[in-house]
Length: 349
Image (cartoon, rainbow, N blue to C red):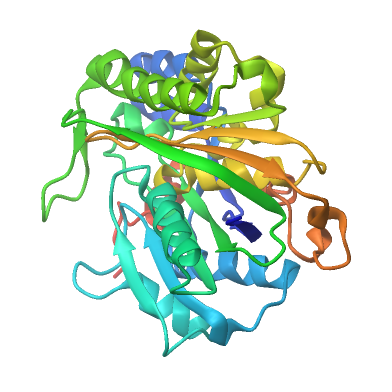
């Protein structure tokens, strides 16, 4: 059975409160901030990007479950904010964690579900026997134009999931996807900030695809929402995942452990991997986890996961890496000017 061997997350310590962003942009900004349910969001430091955050997340995963890195046969980094247009983030991550040179590496891009697409690809390679371990990472330093609704949520962070079949801490029972050509969010080559379809991003995009993949998973597995202990849905804000979970029949208690967005913001490709990490931080053997990601453009990946006894065994040490709760603690708050400087909206000479 293919499953999760280990996991690790990384979140920058810097934060900005959405009320501070609203202070700069006036009454309309305050209305936007109130409707999103996000109190604050993470901000990358000057020397942090998708590669550095991916390395930190992968190192955390390896600290929890030391494996021979020469046996990592694949590394995939999903992101909307790769530092280079032409040069793979995955190769740099592999070098940093000692997995090179015998591996396949690639950068994935499917808006906010690029990280879960990497998990699916890693599952296929492991299940076929082509590789022993695959590392799938979702990480972003998300972009949002000044004053746009995205600026109130676009944050930084990510998580790494190591896939294998050697005593996994959680078995991935099944995965399926639901994809259409729905242009709700896009950024053309050379453009600094993405554009979005506003309210169009809700019903015909996010909700349609999350429900499409989730209902397909329930049908294929012959399960119902009450069969799961936890549920994780893509979290672009706090409102959407709570609404879609209720539409599908899941409870607030099921989604609460993985709902980091009120204090983290939207890490784009990192959102669901971070949610998985936060849930595995508290999960017990036998717990069942329902996961559905979403990526604009548009598509969703769903997963049915069962936690195994290995998570509490001597083979795995959860305390060796920081939990998502620990990463969210002790923030350093920035005002809007320092935030703009950190994000490169104000260029240093």
